[in-house]
Image (cartoon, rainbow, N blue to C red; front, side, top):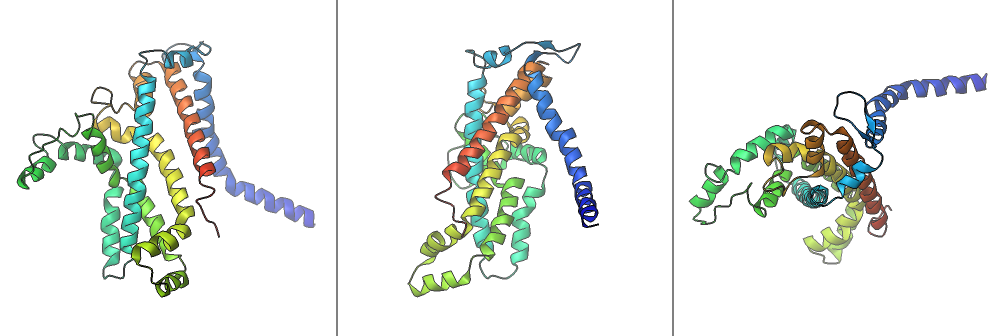
Length: 297
């Protein structure tokens, strides 16, 4: 009887898990396997895919292919995106933990831009960053600042623009909420002990707050890294379309152009496979390198 009851419990558990498992197989696992298989073929969406061996991977690293430039742009964008998101979200979370009135209103205002769809956000900033009609350059001129950057068409300022846009993305808003919850769990006794030792705000923050929320910092860094690799397209495509001069041609945008611009599904699948491997390696390295810096007790 006990054995039958155990089997029923297991079946019930698997039943509750089955929607997620079916969804994973159909929408994540299946497409990943299909993409890996297609990366060894030559296919233009018409007819039957032809076996192409490793040639798609060889072509990626040929001179003039643009893959290495896209890889550089992707890594650069990821570093900027993750750095800005983590620091901006932590800064806002710290502000929300000060004992001031209307903190809920401030939290809503901080998070509200993150609710906006990323594509719509990018188009809004495309207008803001316009060199001649944008409100940002107009504001600089009103302040008497002579520099009027060509934000989206200059190889340097375009990355500054990317960093500014990142502050208002969903990733930053989500990190802020997670940091805000983590800061409330820091033991007050440790702050009191630091006060007795005469520590100032910055010493308390560095020696008490940071060690206690280090697992959350690692979590946000890893999730932010994965998101930046996978969601760069939704910002870069409407904002710069890879320009200027392919400076922001990230891998996800190259993948899109190969698949739906040149209908080279084999090359696009090879790029997707390499991107998948890079994300896995970077994530593993982050966990490996963080062992000494993260405190779980």
